[in-house]
Image (cartoon, rainbow, N blue to C red; front, side):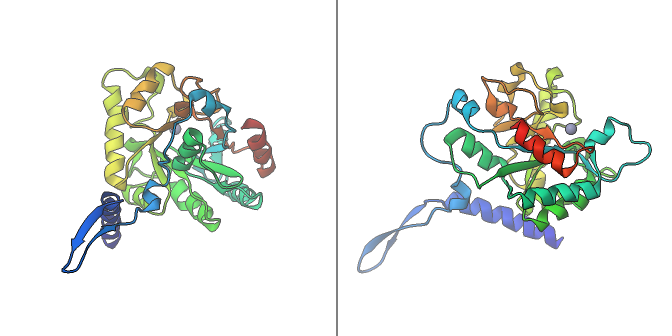
Length: 286
Ligand SMILES: [Zn+2]
């Protein structure tokens, strides 16, 4: 309960800050009239740089920031299929890979930073990388997140809302905690329906309702999306723009030249890969 109150207080504080940004008030006393300008909180507006937004061609021309995609972080079981093991990174291997990233000088960045970099050329830390986790698996909270914290790393968690609170998946409180600790929560649809097949009510069921649910849980705006299976089609992209999404993440296919922000590339860090293989793949893929 205490945690909930703290979270609500934090959300309230944030909305107060944004409402008061740059507010000007006039204070009158017997001798003078002075104008007091409340300082603008840089944290809230840091990514809203003024100036012209980059064209799609300019966005495509910028060096890509590596984005890694993870699913389950757990040891392989005898019944795991050969294909499944691509999506299951054993715990010791995961720890080794995260340590390798830290030792190699990588700094994790979050979607707002990537968006600012792509659209305005805003500076990024040296050796930027983004870590993303799909599908709401509980081990992302219990195993991955504590490991990332050791190095001061933050990540993006793309939540499939149908799974929230189910056995072996994260619950609302855990998702809220990740958001409160400075990670980003994104949408990964309601039940992992193929984006290329969205029609009619799917836009409500798979996009609008999950966004609302995740905003209720986190108290924050949901502005980033990951395609189930990494699959997308060009005709669906305007639907994401019209719903206020700033960027969407696929897997390693070529970006759409007409909409690079909605087709940001990620590579899957395979369960078969060593830390060395991952390091080489990062260099070769982005
Ligand atoms: Zn998925």
